[in-house]
Amino acid sequence: MIVPDNPKIYHIFHVNNLPSILKANGLYSDSKMIENGTITTAIGMDKIKRRRLHELTLESHPGLYVGQCVPFYFCPRSVMLFIFDRANHPDVTYKGGQGPIIHLESDLRRTVEWADQNNIRWAYSLTNAGSRYFEDRCDLENLDEINWQTVNSNQWAGKGEQKQAEFLIENFFHWNLVDRIGVHSQGIATQVLRDLAHSGHKPRVEILRNWYY
Image (cartoon, rainbow, N blue to C red):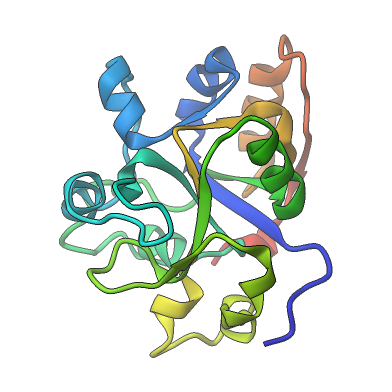
């Protein structure tokens, strides 16, 4: 697969979690948030979160659990966002829709450079890292193994696992690595800008409806 010139990575979360992220100056993994007693508006699948925390490890970093990493997709408008929009999945307790969900966009190569400089492990999966069977890599030379056509496509029926390829960074992702925040509406943009008012790093905030369903 042809690799994009400047691959981007995307993390999604409920807008209500932004103040705690800004206070921490970054994103913590699920494992660290549990350890720190962080209270968040949860949007994921509990069953899969438990699997990532206690069962699934990375082949490229033996002993490192997926749940010990902050996860990113390689595209906005993820499969999970589709599930939030439909609000009818039996394993997802969150029913608030896609409107309050915001995207953080960062540059993959700059993130990897920061991680390497700080001795932080990272990897990426070729499919959904929450599934029981996935392959992972920790060398950017192998990025062509990701199915980029499916990752960037809006027509992913039957290929959802490949669209959910993930970038994973151990424990913590620094807020200064965020380049852009994509939101669904002006109301959410206003809330984000209010939260960012006292932040040292202020990524640009854009209403990007094409990042949503």
